[in-house]
Structure formats: C-alpha cells, structure tokens
Length: 380
Ligand SMILES: *Cc1c(COP(=O)(O)O)cnc(C)c1O
Image 1 (cartoon, protein in one colour):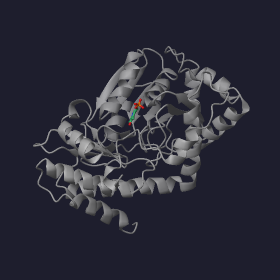
Image 2: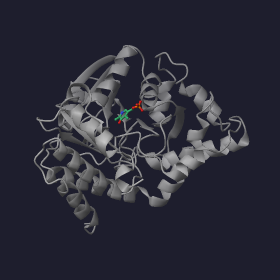
Image 3: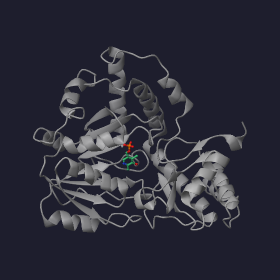
Image 4: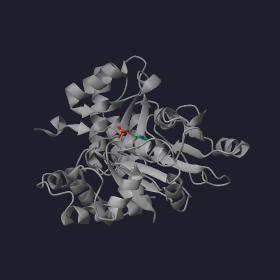
C-alpha cells in the first residue's frame, strides 16, 4: 500500500482509533460485576473528571452522544418546565427537540448558522422571565463554530446544560469554574476511541434537581447508576471493550495534558483553514472558528456529493458532508482527537488533486504546502 492509498478518515467523529486503543479493545471479556471491571470504571470516572475539569459526579453511559444529551434532560427536568434552547446549528436544535419530546415548554433562541451565539442576547432573554434550564452546544459540529460559554451561567438561576460532545478535550471548558450544571461528551470524538460510550457530569445542583425531575426515564435514569457506581458497577451491561479503550485513552490524554491538547487542536485547525484558503475555497463560519472541525463552502460548480464520492473513491479520503439545509452547500474536515499532524497535509494534498480533477481552478499542492508551513512554524 502506498501512502496515497492509506485510508484517511477526517470526519468530526468517529475519529480514527490509534492501534494501542484498538488492541486494548481486543482483550477478553470480563464479568461486569467483578473487581476488574470496578477498577476500570473507577479509573475511567477519575479520568473523565480531569477531562471535564470537575469535582462533580460523572457517569458513563453505553450509548452514543445523543443518549447523554437525553440523559441530561430527563434527569434534571419535568414536563412543563420552561426551557431556553440556544442554537446556531443542527446539534443545538437537537438538544431543544429532545427537551420538547419529553414535554418541556421549549423556546428556541436561534442564531444564524455559521455564527456564534450572542451571549448578550441570551442573557437578556434569561433575565426577561424565569427559565428552569438553558441548553446549548459548546462546539457546533454542523457549522464549524465554537461558542464562547465562559459567562453563560452568570446572572440567572436557570440550570445550564451543555452539549460538549465535540468540544471536550478540544478547547477549555472548565465546568466547575464556569458554573455549568450538566456537561456531556462522547467516546468517538476527541477521546479517539470507537463510538459506544457517552459521558455526563452533573453539578450538585443538577444532581439535586434529579430527585424531583418527573420526565420518564429507565435505561438513562441516573439514580440507579449512582447506586451501582458506589459498588463499581453500572446498572446494565456496559460496552466492556469501549471501557478498555477509554481507560487507555484517558491514560494517554492525561500524559499529554489539557493545555497541550487545546494548543494542538487550535494549531491544526488554523493550519487546515490556511490549507483550505490556499485552494481558493471559502470557510463557512464567519468567526469563532472551531478547533475541532472546519466547514468549507463547496464550489458552486461541483456538487458536494460528487466531490466527496470522488475523494473517497479515487483518493481514499473521507470527509463529511453538510447537515440539514447545508447538505448541498458545505463539506466538513474533522481535526479532533489524536490523529497525527502529518495526516492533514496529506488530506489537503488529496483534496487539491480531487478538486482539480473536477475542474476547480487551484494549484492542487497549495493546500498541503500551506498546512505544512503552518504546522512547522514555531508555536506563538
Ligand atoms: C457527534 C455529536 C453529537 C452526538 O452524536 P451521536 O451520533 O449521538 O454520538 C451531539 N452533539 C454534537 C455537538 C456532536 O458533535
């Protein structure tokens, strides 16, 4: 296999899994009610506290990220609760829709896709009447925008629920310091392990709200999860291989350190943006560029699906399309997790060749050159 045939999967999750984590998953099954699993669970919870920058309780659910979003809502709210869902993309909308489905009185405060949420407007709305909770997204994966949530929790009493699924470990989100009540994340994003586990951290206030929350729940009920956690167990059979991988991943991530992870993601994102511009393409986001994923406006002359299929078939490069009404307008390059830096220049090289095959006017190698230059420049 030559370098050019090597599959490159650069979507905003699932991320490629490093061989060490894949090997960890191949270990034999164990009893999920035995001491070995208890030790793994405790180590993973401790590692996740580090990842969320919290002293709060953290639960690990078997299920994709959306399970943790649903758990966040059903374990803190009751039908009829007034909830403000702040959204500027499809994941922000999803959080609001889950709350709606469980009977909350949801008001969506929407902002244009491609822009960041306007915290002044959010605060004004939160002051206008009492809300039980405010929901939002940290990194909006559908548009390539990262929202600034540093002051979101200030000046009101609403519970603050944050979908940090694609933003955790990518940029600073100190849950306790910023007063965030519930924060969720998922295994297949920057943890660089396969899909199947999701994570939820709850402030004391959020845990207390669970005792009166009336939304229906069974598999995602955190009350039994809390009782079982005390014994080093989960209420139901956990995805044991993913736990093996999670423990290995958290060990490695903690050696790297949060600051270094944040710097690495920011540097790569900037390099990918340089590469995209060097191919004469425009970014979809107007500001607050995401360190996890870059959304690119597709050339008008090349249908997105055709471009993505060509890159996959001819160059073994998998990028993501757009979601919802952006399906034919953008494509997205994921750059979260432990993917080696060198893969981004290689990806931009393949993207340049693919675009040029389809008639786009660019120097096919300019993107890779720009990425290389950005990533080899001394850190600021
Ligand atoms: C990936 C993602 C999700 C969850 O997706 P699942 O497919 O349920 O794992 C939710 N929110 C954001 C911001 C995401 O990036």
